[in-house]
Length: 200
Image (cartoon, rainbow, N blue to C red; front, side, top):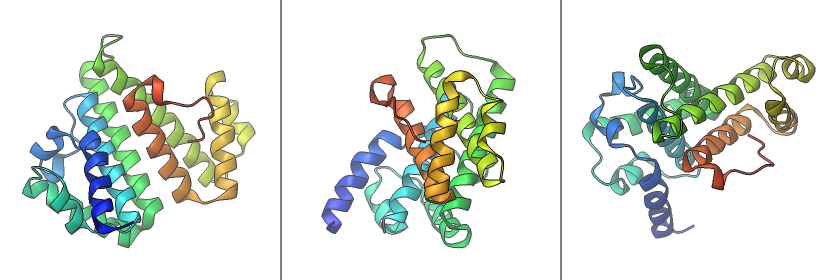
């Protein structure tokens, strides 16, 4: 892909994922969400940024492409790139998923569940689905068996566990966590974009 094509791709992807709330937050509190939406949009931004960096886009290209990126946002891009270099994709994605789960839990402790059918409810439900997928993945990485995990899940999550365990057997932890991130971003776009054959 040409540099111009990558810039267009970055612009399109990040326009969907870049939250204004993340830009107002400083690096130490970026995941201290005031809402499920804030937590979700920040996580989505981070996941998208790491996915683009894995495809070879540098932090400088991302900084040049993101409209209105603050100094704090630019520093976060640099930190994500460093984390990718130092911790690898699996460690970086895992950290994002863990921090997102913690952020959503803090919102739940402060505010409880949102009103059903609201935009905040969409982010709440996506946070819950992401947490379940992440915990299934961690169980697979730790050597748990599919049977053990399936026994702890609601019926609708059993196929998700099967797909994640199979994906881990066929690939690696980074691929599983990257897929969970992609599924999370699809969840934020609403039910029409999600597939029944969800494998992450």
